[in-house]
Image 1 (cartoon, rainbow, N blue to C red):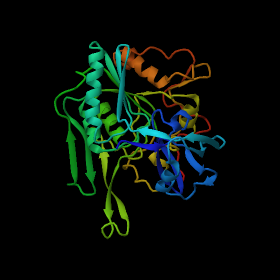
Image 2: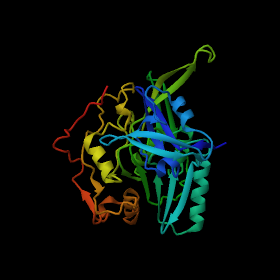
Image 3: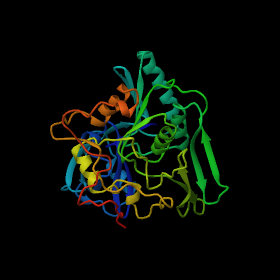
Image 4: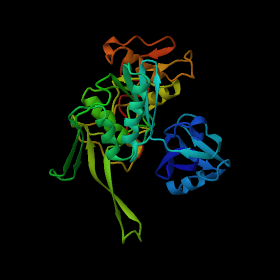
Length: 367
């Protein structure tokens, strides 16, 4: 329970292609440099085109210590074959550590244990340093999970107010979820890290904390998965099942997440390569890239291709996590962007939303 033997990837399928939703922290794939949005084109020299998620998962899993060769495609780059050694993948929902005056919380998935594990981790960090001055909540490359877990994580940082609403096809089909009194961090400054691999439950948390001005959001616009699917078995499962979209998620301000995502307060790319991806297209690694995805709400549109506000240049130390460094900078400024120190040397900055001359201001995802 909570572990398996494989390479540590969360995947999905669209149009016959299997895409990486997120590499699991510390797993073989993550250590090999596999990123969210990469496409699996071949496994052990055999084409992966047309394979289902289940079929690809079966090929990636195997005995501990055995290897599998996987060819990955990444926008704008040559195909790359990587030899991955299978190992025991332990699914840890929440991890954390003390970083000087601050607590770092990593939530890698949302499961039935996430709320409890988050509470225990916060308690442990506060015991290690009772004088903590703030927290970073890292939701990057977290593809989502259980709604109840997203509500529990949001509730941990809120005293009151709506967390998310779920609205169905009819006006009276509305469910609202609210926070209960009790902020586990006693209102300390909070930064939430997101990127294009942050989806669904991650976006519910980021949206709630942003709308209530409880946290500063740092990173890149999230994936944009804000729809609810209901699975209906056919003939008690004998003929498979039918997945139907039955509702949408909305943040406390009434904004739909679907195809739009959550935009950061401080837009920061983790690397030069990541900045190039965003400057070419904001749709490549998002729900908007899927032809079968539910449309965004009327009047809503995902931001087009643009230059991220901050991105590491060639001179920046590639072993450092620049997004995390900036998150700590925000905490040092007491959570106030107006007091944030200037970007350090080696960082390329632009006016927020600057558009490349050859990128255009809007895009239409490939059908």
